Length: 248
Image (tube, rainbow, N blue to C red):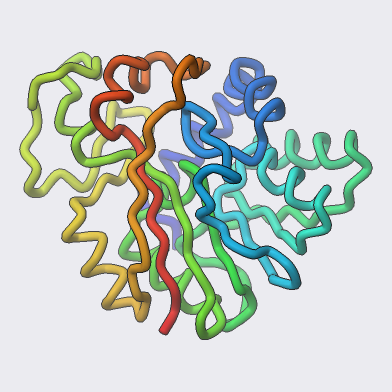
């Protein structure tokens, strides 16, 4: 059964998906295999690893830009999202590139696949931001094969702690580090865990932490998400990070 937070987030994305793609699709499609709001190339980060002969699930695929780019490189990938609006865009994008990809509408808190189906589950500000981690992480562990990997990019606790009452990013701490977990403006909910909470959740779900990559924009980088973090802020302090873990 969907939680209140999940219903709120789904309603938000159904309402805003068209606006979101109108604002960001050109950049997302111009640099599809890239991470975060500053589009740092995967070839630079190297988070996904070797994708030859692996089964991949993008969890919270949004408009499908990552999935379509991987599919065009003959990677076996499935996109999953809870928003029909986002999936409609993803389906149209795949058709535009003449790529036949499966896109599934479902929740990351109740993933509709049998155990041990995937070698890699990943998301870039997708389900690990908008789904309750204590529900989504065990689900990911369930559907991963032994040795399979979870890779996800999300906001850092530091960024969340520096948001003021008007949700403006500052250089001052405004929120406590302890007990943060759930940030909401009433329209949507972002889940932000401390590093210790993420590590304990991964371990309790049967996953082993391999790496934590703090992202820094490349010199001269631009973004269509200026409200998220300015270049000056993100070049000095990590606003985004990539977690990499595997199933033991």
